[in-house]
Amino acid sequence: MKKGYVYIMTNKHNSVLYTGVTSNILKRVYQHKTKHFPGSFSSRYNCYKLVFYTDFGNITEAIEFEKKLKAGNRKRKVNMIESQNVEWKDLAKDWLFQF
Image 1 (cartoon, rainbow, N blue to C red):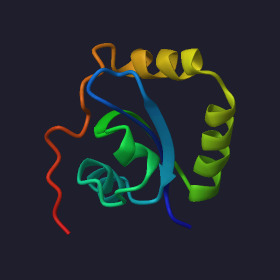
Image 2 (spheres, rainbow, N blue to C red):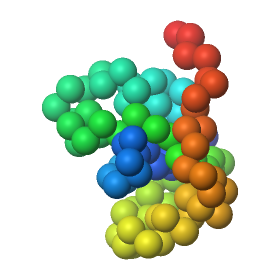
Image 3 (cartoon, one colour):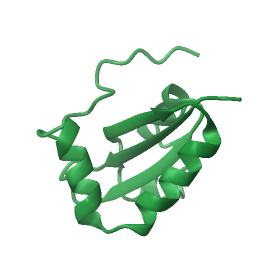
């Protein structure tokens, strides 16, 4: 079974949070950064900065965690981000996107 990832993207001012799940974190973050889906929430609100991600042994576990995270409030997401990324830096800033 494929590995899964839950991630949070934000905009320049950290005012909008987008929570997602994927089995290919590199490809999915690249899609957000390049606005691959122009009408999507993350494109409309310029969520291009990866501020949090965590991996799971399989995609099913990741989906369950994403559902719990989305059911929570913003404060819970902010606390999770700041537990690993206090300065809200773009964790994918130096990633090489090659497909």
